[in-house]
Image 1 (cartoon, rainbow, N blue to C red):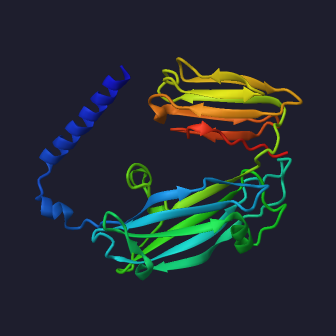
Image 2: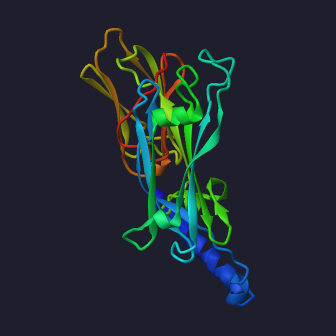
Image 3: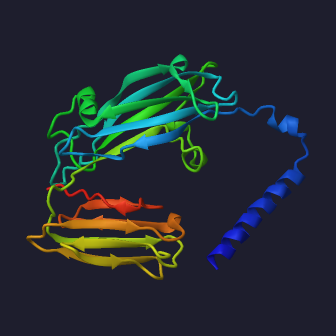
Length: 293
């Protein structure tokens, strides 16, 4: 049934586009004469998706490809910025340490001459950063950052005609799918436990289509005893998993199913804070929990 609905939506979208084209009275050249094409920095590879509050040696890097209407020929430079967003700047939170947010800092400018040509004929370059380097650049020290805060890495693309493109110019079409050009890469700071944190974990599972998780499930392993959680129908489900005192091994694993774009989940830790949330299309494999104690 779901596949039939998708096909119907695709047909209606195509039909509407054909009708719009037939209704147009202007020649194509006139319609497109005032069109202005943009530019993107397509993400090729990204290494690192979060930083651990307790380990400042963590690294992050991204390789990107410049694309414009002249196959990258309009590229002048790319600027690389680092900023910090304090997401625990709430006096009502137990971990409140004042608002430590920092304005972004320009750390690198990459001129077009330093790009190399990639396998598809477009200019490519990369940037990288360690957690400790980012903290030093922003002037942050221990106690001024915590779990849920974010290191913000931003790219800004300047063309030879003076136009500038960054994350504020994005649409969903650009940030997702093939282009994958967010310009902004927020890395969440997590508190990765060095040992299992005991207590009750609340697990919230959601399916946007409302027909269950299509074969996907979360596996909780506590000292070798595994429990699979999923929903076989409906749009949501809530569960409680208890990690006993004295537990020596505790892992959570996500196994994907079909229609992954419908799946989201949240795990709330025993201290009543989000330990992890993911989706749509959650990352398969072992889940990294963040429990700031």
